[in-house]
Length: 143
Image 1 (cartoon, helix red, strand yellow):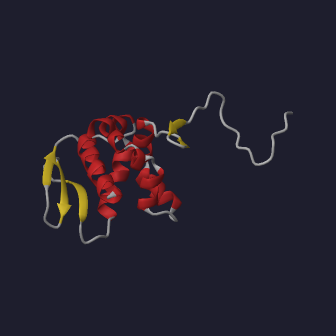
Image 2 (tube, one colour):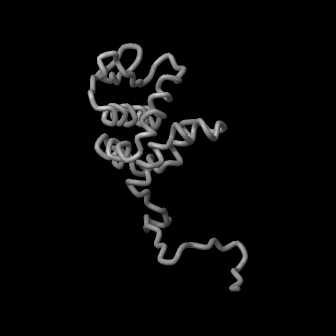
């Protein structure tokens, strides 16, 4: 067994951090950001001791906000439909005086809006409606 020098991190073979001026930083991969954001309500509920703000920050979104698009999120949700229900529950359970929400109407369509008085859109596709909400909610959280 090979011994490692003390206090040296073990990096995967071929790992090359992106050079950014004097510092080295690992660039967030777009699909990693989408996956972590889409899993946010599950992590929030399971972990219980972490804020939504912290989960957004840890997702890589702040370093790559362009990765979070309605198209990318809706595609991911179609592959992981259980996350749609998690986001609908997250929206329903929010306890704020203002903010984004998504709700299913009796007509079967979904309303995405900003409470109390803000933009409102109607979407018929479940994954797209949820993606519209996710993108708006995360942008709002991230500031």
